[in-house]
Image 1 (tube, one colour):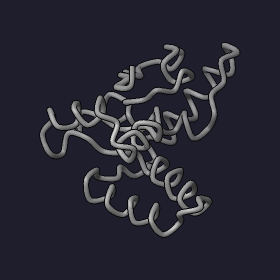
Image 2 (spheres, one colour):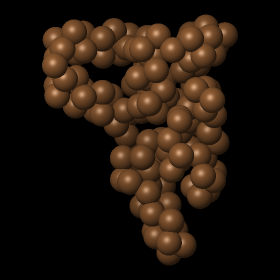
Image 3 (cartoon, one colour):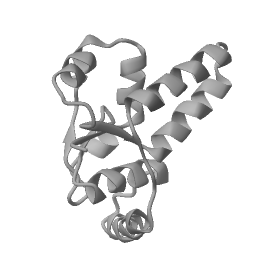
Image 4 (cartoon, helix red, strand yellow):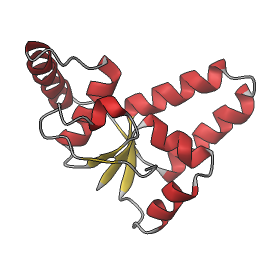
Length: 133
């Protein structure tokens, strides 16, 4: 997998954002996936939405388009080390954001995100692209 989508990038797919769709259409099947925690955030949002059934169905469809990348022990070890390093430098990140970032790093993938906290260069080894810019 070359790219992993952060939650805001997947939401852009759901909203038919042309800039994101154009990039995805240029890639081969299997080049794009989403971390397990992104799936969790999407399901949470669907359950809280006014159009619960419709949004849950959309998430099911997304799971067929983008393979879900599980959280592994290696990802958690990278998360712990990264969290400690960021805290020591006074640059903490939200736990879910950091696990998502570590998932991308561990898989050698570029994280597609519009999240300024992930694009700030503080997470060592994280490569990001913002397809919404």
